[in-house]
Image (cartoon, rainbow, N blue to C red; front, side, top):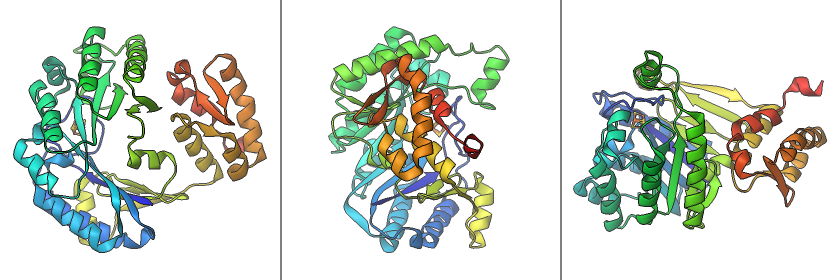
Amino acid sequence: MSGIYIHIPFCKKACTYCDFHFSTSLKYVDEMVDAICLEIIKKKDRITDQVGTIYFGGGTPSVLPTKHFEKIFDTIIKNFTVSSDAEITIEANPDDLTGPKILELRKLPVNRFSIGVQSFFEEDLIWMNRAHNALEAETSIKRSQDAGFENLSIDLIYGYPLLTDSKWLTNINKAIEFEIPHISAYSLTVEPKTALAVAIKRGKDIPLNDEQSASQFITLIDKLTTGGFEHYEISNFSKPGKYAVHNTNYWRGVTYLGIGPSAHGFNGNVRYLNIANNAAYLSSMELGKIPETIEELDLYDRFNEYIMTSLRTMWGTSLSKIESEFGKFFLADTLKTMESFVERDWLYQEDNHLKLTTDGKLFADYIASELFLSAEDHR
Ligand code: SF4
């Protein structure tokens, strides 16, 4: 089954660390929803099987009025066959999840919220320039659960200067106490051109500390796995079987459509990248043209993509898949490169799969990049 990702490029405020594509002006929301619906119609032939997941990401999808979600769902249902048990997720910010809004969303086909909590501490949320406060972080979860949204995920951030180890423990424990089945936790990174990067450069904020981040990551793994969560992907933890289906499908190379400015789509061989600019997206869609660039992935791109995504998961990288899909050369190179990481106790082999140890998880991107191959390697 395939997936549909819809990017809603609007936010109430700009978080200091964020480099996603969004606008804080909600002026063109109506036009954007019309353009998104048109793009859905234009891409109807790109999916031939059932749709198993729909994911509204952003930006902040929860800023959309309910009537706009209705319009998008109507368009999807008219143009695709959506599986009766499809996972349908909306990323939501706590301040948007008011009682009435949750009840409105309950009437839609939505069955999962991914709530951008980030921290339960007021001063942290202020430092991040989040639109919500600490009280809303908690009430949004409680209200969603009371309204019958059991399939919840929350996002947390660690590794920033204000987050002491004791506050981090409190954030983790609160998430466990809410009995949320899924938690995504991200180490804060300083992306170029963000307000955080500028503040650090000007000496108004202190640089991030890698050791703090690593130790908070280890605490996270320890607490959540002890609390009954599976660490199924570097940044994702779930109660058994409660994996995020949409995201897991990305890592498995399943076909998905990307709709909206900056959205990406993939069909196994080709990646589609929409323009990351609201005005340019709208004017192109007005002319009936999808503003996308198309990237054909060659064997090496697909191999590197497989390494990058599979290694981050608890299922690991299948050595037999490398041999059957990419060939003996790829397998031989992988086996050779992995040796030094096995010696360092960062990788291990289990059931013919390559997996990260806990220490290895701290260096996942580096290890994956060392395993990458290019055409030059085989000349
Ligand atoms: S709400 Fe999300 S997308 Fe919007 S600015 Fe904050 S982190 Fe970025």
